[in-house]
Length: 315
Image (cartoon, rainbow, N blue to C red; front, side):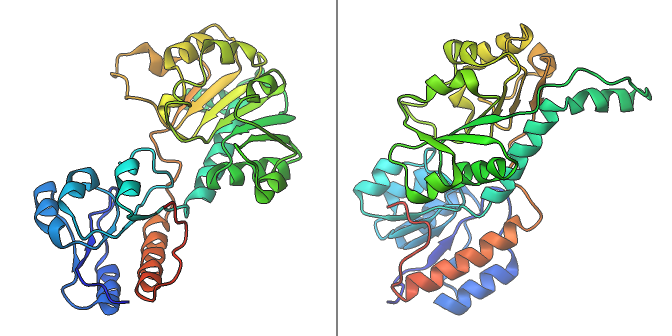
């Protein structure tokens, strides 16, 4: 199968496509058929001839003006922030990017043990030049509840289980591979029953109407006083006000957030909430992030040209 319109290689959200990447794509589809949108206006100008999008920056703006669009390769692992209903209604192929799942899983574990071992206390003592006496630490975790067993949640579950932690995971209809990484699979309707025995609660869910603020006052009250909450998914999964209150009252042992709804103003006391770690949406980052995705995208384009099944296809 030949591409009858240029591949539009959008400026990826977090980096500029390398010259080598563009050259390798042109070797696949032809000189001048790989275009990089430099701005929203440029993207709109290119939209009418586009058949393939690599990346999803400006996607919402372009979609109504791209009648020839047949395939979108997003740089994201999920599609909850994309115009998914429009994509599906038009029969456009959507493939996602799960290459960074290992990095996100390792980040989740790093945050977990930073909280349970109270490493911020050690850092504060170090910066103050103080050789501190041992401080109170949380109990060694024995049970973890992982909400969401997609590519990321499965990797987190596998790492936790490998450490001898009993892992509970949630899935609508557990697949064999999901059951393999968990000691027990729960449904999306009964997972709250496991909160009382969860030393670690990890959020790896998409954000939608069902999961919005799924962790609120009631859920936080069900957790043990030593439990830690780790969110490497979307900020909207948590009622932030309820979480900050629970931490201030020492109702739970700690929380680590890689995503929040909106960064707080510098003077907001939320930044200094006790036993809270914030990382600025960096869980997916690693040195090979760009080169790995570019190699993957090139292989995907080759598969598309040869009418082969694309990897990580959503629709």
